[in-house]
Image 1 (tube, rainbow, N blue to C red):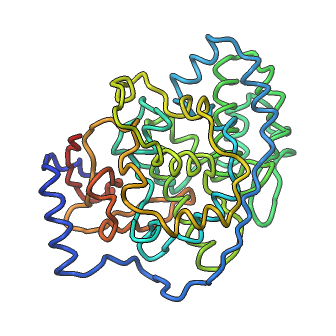
Image 2: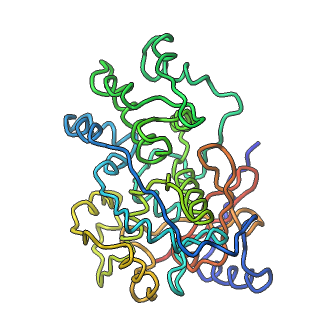
Length: 373
């Protein structure tokens, strides 16, 4: 039986002491198969899906339909209108350290955390400690298609394709159902599926792969999607960095917002930014960000980054209870969308003092810390 989260609340000072003590005694916590000699240059493809269809659907919906969608799936619809700065992402990958699974900008270590991504997406109707694990005997892809669309077995069988050894379905096959299905909840669910397949896990351009269907089915059970989103981001960053090239298939929109949010230098943060009604992605879209900045300029910014140049905790992060280690382990496994473990180091990143933290192992309790100010 899966154990519950260990109910231990510790102060920030305790977490800091634990991190320093562990690092002194055990050294830096490196993941398995760490790579010391990385390519000097990294060329990354950040090509995105064409999202005009999704934008058109969202704009056609009335406020009631949008409200139903947001209540079920949080703020993920904002992702379809976020412009990805490809030069920024390409520059960031150069500074990703696969061994520590964090960005090392000059002397500063930074990494996205579960709490930050959860705050960005505002997905509240999930169980924080319930992570995605692939079912040992899931329904067939065809049966999932039939259940989600109300179409026939023959139709579903005809839509299933194979792209680069990946089983998937073209987005064009679902477009009509999203637009005109008589059941409003079906339309909402299929639209959310499209965002997960085309924006959050965009591995096969123009298609939604079977792994996304498996993952999406589990969301109805209250699974927290954020650890899997984060694991896929780490996995893709590490793959591109080790090889020195490749296509980034994590959610570029979230990574884009995350890094720029830490440059929101503010002297006084209004209270509403810590409230449940504040929508960080909506606020990001309303803010004017610099455009047409070259990759080399971003590289220069990151090479010379100092602690005073950034805010360690993004202004929209609310004080909350965080997980900071898995039982007696100094690291925590994240499960990416294929159901495999992706180890995240918990030592060696300065972020642990501020907003870090990961998820728990399914077989072990996890210690919690409350973040104060």
